[in-house]
Amino acid sequence: MANRSRKKSNQDEPTDLIPNGTEEESVPKKTKADKPGKGAMHDGHRERMYNRLSKDDTLEDHELLELLLFFVIPRKNTNETAHLLLNSCKSLSGVFHTNPTVLQSVEGVGPQTSYFLRGIGELYDRMGKEGLRPKGGDPFSFSEFRKHVQEKYKPFNYEVLEFYSVDSKDRITFSSMISSGENDHVAVAPEDITKFLAENKPSGFAVAHNHPNASCLPSERDNDFTKRIHLICALNNVRFLDHVIVGNDAVYSYRLTGQLGRIEKQCDIDRLIHSDLPPEW
Image (cartoon, rainbow, N blue to C red; front, side, top):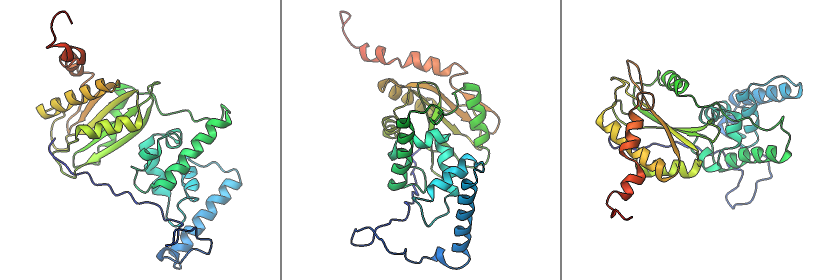
């Protein structure tokens, strides 16, 4: 895992402010999307979605989220943004209960959209109706996690790395993918891990990355990286669940192979802190 440069292509939603900072009350200015054909297509699609909702037609999760995004992203196709949000947050519950700052790391989501989505989650919580409260993400399972990342990484011919946030009930609540665009390495600085833990406040943490053109067996660099993650998680009182590597031959799990257990013993934080202290301490 060598140096890498993270590319963020967050595109904030169109603003409703005119240059002097006052809210615009007039008819929105014409844009390229408003030209005949393309604009009419988006308008017609939104109208159909509204009609389906009014007729109590069953909407898929991504369709419902897409419809809600209409109100904060007025001049853009929101279908892709809805899919990206669900992919990162794992469920509608995750979308509505993720910190706005974290939501803004999803492409196409800016401050206005992130606060809107988090506000919906807060509204549901305050309503106090169990039938309306989000249920959370899927329970974390070591074997299922391996299958999940193996399937997810199939399209990638370059190396990617993901952080996974897991709550106290072992539900995956958020994931964040990093890539350098290179086919043989991707690196993460310790402060990136610390920032993820600080923003998401997870109970558990998991990492996955791929070796698109090599075996899944870890390199010394992978082992050193795993040791660093263990120490950072220990210092932040977060459970380090697993580090999974997807190769072109199989999937390697530090936890299931026992390697993570050996690292935990070797890099026990209490032992390291007290190793140079006098016996009476």
